[in-house]
Amino acid sequence: MATGSFQILRTGIDGIEAVIADSSHVFARHSHDAYGVGMIERGAQKSASGRGIVEAEAGNTITVNPGEVHDGAPLGDASRAWRMLYIQPAVVAAAAEDIFEGRPREEFYAPVLEDGRIAGLAAAALTALLDRHTTSIGRDERLLMLLAAVLRERAPKSSSAAASRVSRARDRLDSDPASVITLEELAAESGLGRFRLVRDFARITGLTPHAYLLQRRTELARRMISRGTALAEVAIAAGFADQSHMTRNFTRRYGYTPGAYLTASA
Image (tube, rainbow, N blue to C red; front, side):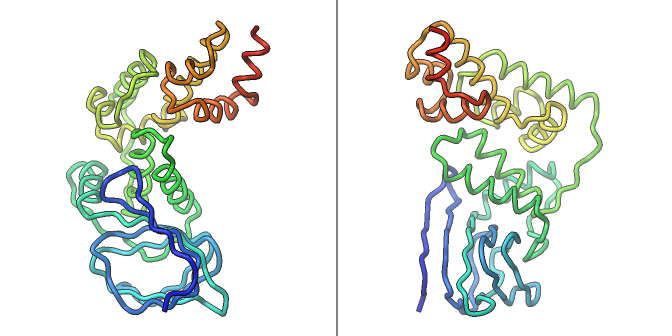
């Protein structure tokens, strides 16, 4: 019998669901039709996987491939807390095609990963996929970065052609930051694949396309506020989901709220 709490949540991408759990449940041997990737947030567990007996503790990333028989039990008497994404094979196949540019690789290489960078990518992907404010660019790039890590992508050497194409993508975002654009559309306009665009854009500019877009939208909002435009109107005109979304990003960037800036500009 299951003990503890389990939440099953829809995400912003079809074919992906999230499970948030805090439980001492001992799972019988079973398998999934989907890929699983997530992280242990508290406690520890032991499991028999298709790749041997493994133990995972807080901060570790855990993965499972479709059809891989595994179980799971807490280590010790305490419960453990974890979050997982379950991703349909078609979604991973499409991402792998993009990440490896036609070279097939669709298996998560290790059941437990102790790399803090990958745990950070898992946490960021979970947050982006569950946050209604996150744009499609933000969701797609976070998912691609996580899948590239657990599929063990190795970045090729940079090139001048990549810099030129990143510049093309940046010009597109600069020209109309408030417009809605998907990562797929931005990649097509720049002449790069989705994952290569995310990776090269971050390497060259220091920001991912999503972070760069939010920066440009925040700068646009600040200019509009300085002219006395109402905050609710600014939020929509600058491309934010709503006023709270604008306030969160504005405050993160400038250290003060849009309302404080509007008052100071009056």
